Length: 251
Ligand SMILES: Nc1ncnc2c1ncn2[C@@H]1O[C@H](COP(=O)(O)OP(=O)(O)OP(=O)(O)O)[C@@H](O)[C@H]1O
Ligand SMILES: [Mg+2]
Image 1 (cartoon, rainbow, N blue to C red):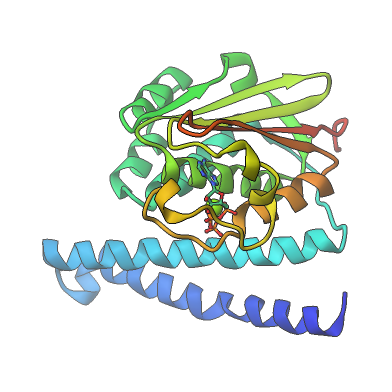
Image 2: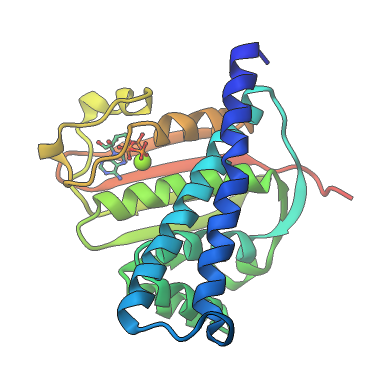
């Protein structure tokens, strides 16, 4: 790793401590009225928003560090359940817009209940019970980051519906993330994977990001030996397909 990159990564890394302190402080104030006194509904809403944004920041810091690590070819394989991966990723994302939703998802007793709860938010999870319970071996952090970015985009650019389809074939895991938004004209299908490239605001919704998510996702997919494809036409929504080879079980 070059000296400049190390300096940048260290700087990003050092954001973790103050962030953890802010998060712990806010959580205590909210959850320990016996120590800090009761909080009003209005105050609670402010705390909720501050805490949610702290979580966004934590995720961004983790993403930035993971990309640096990925650039060095470092991959951490472990065995994990698809159910845990998908539940944690969806909770993380939906929590950003609706705190109650995360709680509801965490309390679901089975896949059917989980799917129903998601549907109330226009999110369709399409996968069978066997796959839900299946354990796979890959780099969980990187896969989560890939999914999180694709799902975040779909939530941001959809009209009302998002579908996450999960499949496992020929020793590879396949995710497809589809939305019903404005879609992406064929002329831009390659360029949207370039750093900082964004379609004109008029073509998409008003929420602006940085045009870095998809470039990062592509790097991670390639580092894991996988492939990513986009199927989309203007006005027809977008569908991102990711295929990542699985490792044989890690002991
Ligand atoms: N599901 C989608 N539907 C329509 N356009 C999309 C979709 N996903 C990505 N795009 C287009 O591709 C561009 C690049 O996406 P990318 O995720 O890299 O950046 P971003 O979402 O704008 O910002 P961020 O860096 O926060 O992710 C977006 O600005 C948008 O124009
Ligand atoms: Mg994005």
